[in-house]
Length: 80
Image (cartoon, rainbow, N blue to C red; front, side):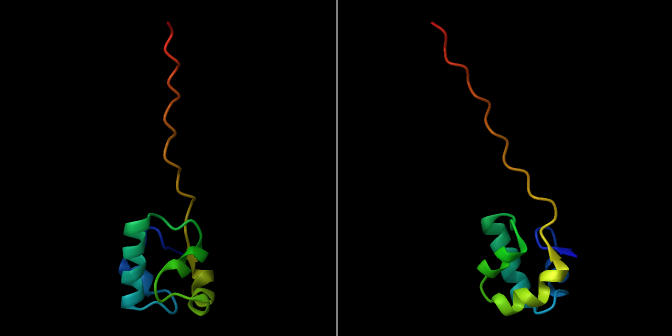
């Protein structure tokens, strides 16, 4: 499967229904919005609708879930 979060534009173009323009749109969306949380999120990219998603769903993945940003450690209340 092609990990849509790490794939190059060339790798994205190998997916069914994805050509140069859609591969570029995926890469730009990813750069602006961060990693896709699920393959279904690809429909948020301009030019990718349910029909395209259905074609590529079996061959695309988002890899391991992206680690959440580490929470800031709680600062202990100042003692008086």
